Length: 70
Image 1: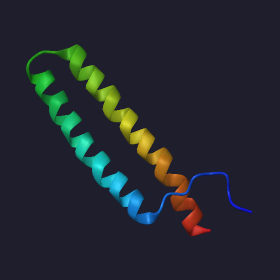
Image 2: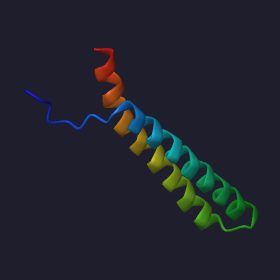
Image 3: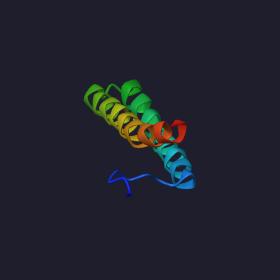
Image 4: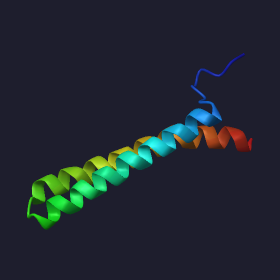
């Protein structure tokens, strides 16, 4: 019986990690610029977005990594 949980292919996981890294770097750059220009609210929003992306990627990748160990 197949697992009901989605298991991404390794190449798809690698692609997701690469793309999320690009997005995370762009968000971090935007956050730094906002901080330097005194736009603290935008900087705070970018920090929250950056953290959310990190959690989302970890939530997506960790179940797959655990199933590979088993």
